[in-house]
Length: 401
Length: 236
Ligand SMILES: Nc1ncnc2c1ncn2[C@@H]1O[C@H](COP(=O)(O)OP(=O)(O)O)[C@@H](O)[C@H]1O
Ligand SMILES: [Mg+2]
Image (cartoon, rainbow over all chains, first blue to last red; front, side, top):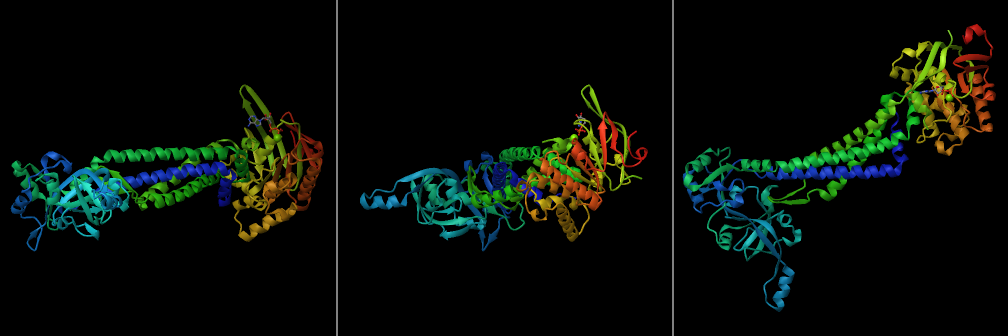
């Protein structure tokens, strides 16, 4: 037979200060775990949804995995269209997207001050706070290949206009209300009006700024491309494109399925993930000691009481279970509070990193991991003190003060 | 057969080089319904004996049979189950659980018995009435006086209708008047409810309330007030 629940619950209230401190410590631990797990899952998700199996990327052979460094000849799309039979076509239009992709300093033009200055001095606006942005020059073919792209507000960019992804502001480290339709960005010594915003199904494009390919080419005085994205027919094979790139050594290009490309990037971020898991383990260990310390304190003041319960006929296992209940109860409360905090304050918070930005993914899995770790901490933390209390014989325990 | 039978029981403790033998080949028989007091100066092994009868300690040699069960052979968890069914323990300091109310404290041992909720409630209420504290059921131990706490402790010891109730210095931490109340209560429990009691005390006066008085000296019993045939009952 087990001890009543109330016994465990009221025991927690017996030393309110210590219990509250432990609750705070455990809550902090679980919040940290939730954030780290959310970070890892956000990173993984951003990279995994970024790949489309039926899209092949063709880019320079010299740029390893970094497409920003890739430079390929401007006629590559024409060559590919002419040479490859396996490119998806509709209404005679091959689904091929030539793109120029770069990380450059992007500033935002302060619209209020611009208006202000215009009135009086007729001087152009001052651009401020420049951060590294990801700019992609595309043609009207892009949406044929990048099918996840959806315009959320405004329009596709016209001349010297840009369309910004949902997470572009986060990537730039700017408040979201500055990167809205009608505002102006500045990069490559030119001003670009924001014509629209877009989403891309959670993929990496959401942190990008898209403009028309000829505009960015002239602004940067480049005639080349970074890559060509090709859409294959449903279930199509990338073998033909790969073979073509291998045979045309003179073009110095390579072809790779987009899924494979992002898979490679995920591996690239392997150390980050390992580090994150290390943090989870260290933080969890801290929580374990907090819980154990509290339970040691609780048990050491209760030696005679525990002996009394045994003298009455409660088995040792009943006492262990009751102490574990106490620990788990506290941990469950901590997990609940932590889950609330994480969902309220951290869910979807955008994290900037070199590849772009991604939201913290505090999803079911993160909550599950966080709560499980919390509960295990509570249970494990209570065990050493429980066993310590039961090592002593009942007769000796009864004599203790 | 007597309710409690100790035959040739020895218990020794070793502290470093020193060996203490509080019980040296003792024999004792207690019949159902008896009220036995065990007297002796501090440190003579009274509590040790009580704990052996209560099944919370084991002898080094000898046999202890209580209510037909040879308790020296039981495993630790069987022993716990046996205590729940057969034994009530009254402590020197009441040892009530501070986070439980008087009612909940008394109810605790009944949770170890297979009882219907209504039966359980009835038993707890009867036990509280027997010690005259039915009106304090909802009080926490800190809201009770020392004497009341001990009475709740007694109610807890009798609530599961044990075969034997042991009491280790039940009045040891109470003042004179309260001590007398407890003594009267113990006497009543024995006379009116027929509860078999083994009480340890170092106080001659308290020992006097028992019908049969033993004292422990140098590891052996001495019958100080023999009612029954001496050869049948006690001491070697
Ligand atoms: N667990 C133990 N370890 C060592 N010595 C003990 C232990 N328990 C009791 N003793 C010793 O045994 C003797 C009898 O103890 P106890 O039965 O508590 O005496 P009493 O209850 O008569 O005062 C004492 O000398 C005490 O020091
Ligand atoms: Mg004693």
